[in-house]
Length: 179
Image 1 (cartoon, rainbow, N blue to C red):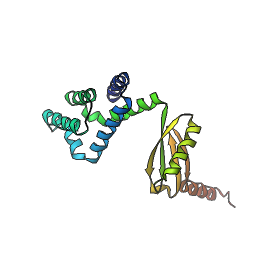
Image 2 (spheres, rainbow, N blue to C red):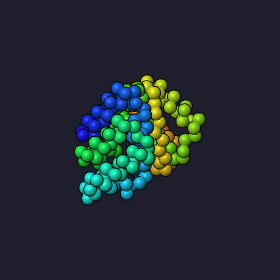
Image 3 (cartoon, rainbow, N blue to C red):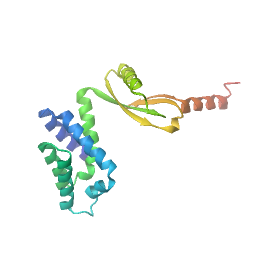
Image 4 (cartoon, rainbow, N blue to C red):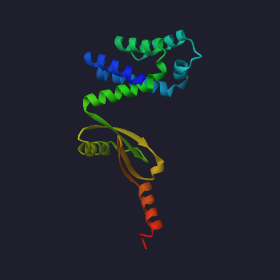
């Protein structure tokens, strides 16, 4: 709940200043950086580290990512109010608000191997027709599906994986449907 409140506040400020996509991109860059640098993230979220160190780290991030003043102040506020540990959730909530504003839905698409670029576009078009909205693909590799594709938008799942086909085949055998 706290993350959503902070995300909404930032969203309204970003929308008012026409910076929704800019702020979203910057937040994503910082989030990716923190995910790839767990020591930095740990220093920000751990109660063991002093507030001054956390402020120094955030100031270095602001410089490194050339963060605009409004967003920089927001990041400093998160540290000051000891809410920086909610940064990932705030970024996620902000992204969802921007998507909603732009009429975009996120589709998670799992394949065993990376999906070729030309298929990504076609797949996004198909999912856009089904959902009635613009679709942003989030591609994931998942060897457990064996082959095929599993796509989901919210609660809707389309499972065209070989794993699910094999499962269906096994269930048919167990029921004796294949006689």
